[in-house]
Image 1 (cartoon, rainbow, N blue to C red):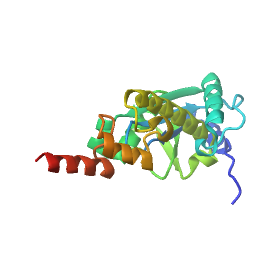
Image 2 (cartoon, rainbow, N blue to C red):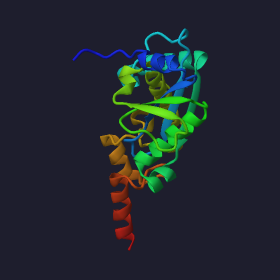
Image 3 (tube, rainbow, N blue to C red):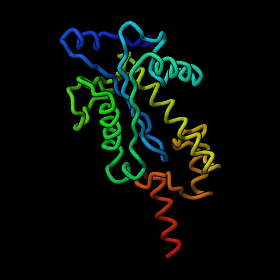
Image 4 (cartoon, rainbow, N blue to C red):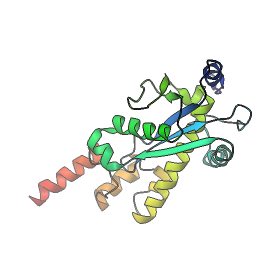
Length: 210
């Protein structure tokens, strides 16, 4: 299958319908065992789109970082999070949508292009869900880059506070090294207690202490 390159067609169609403020929205951090889930909303200017925007997952870390700075320089950007506490209380899907809603609210959007197949219920504007939107839509690709770089930086900072889990490299995802560290070092306040590997360790600890 050939690589997909995102375009500006969906944004242009919305603008031609008279929609004034069109934003792309994406989130990162549903799968990790630790840290927040982070969402970004980006409103690109049609005549100032950085070259080389792609889904953040297909870019190198250096390329993502360079594009992050380019996007921040030419676009309107809003970043928001849902906390570990919110993830555990609400569930990860609802927490991801909450982060998206917060990001969109920061840009006073008229229409949001959402990565995925579901539209968050509290957006406050019309929206279109686009499956694999980060590979198809330039605004969503830009949002994916902003969200990814922002969350990775958060996890690097948290790794300095809680060394040994490898968050600076694994961003909180359940790698072998992270799972081994959970067993050896225990659960931090930044771990998602509703996620099975973390829950199981806490359950074992509680069983032992009893």
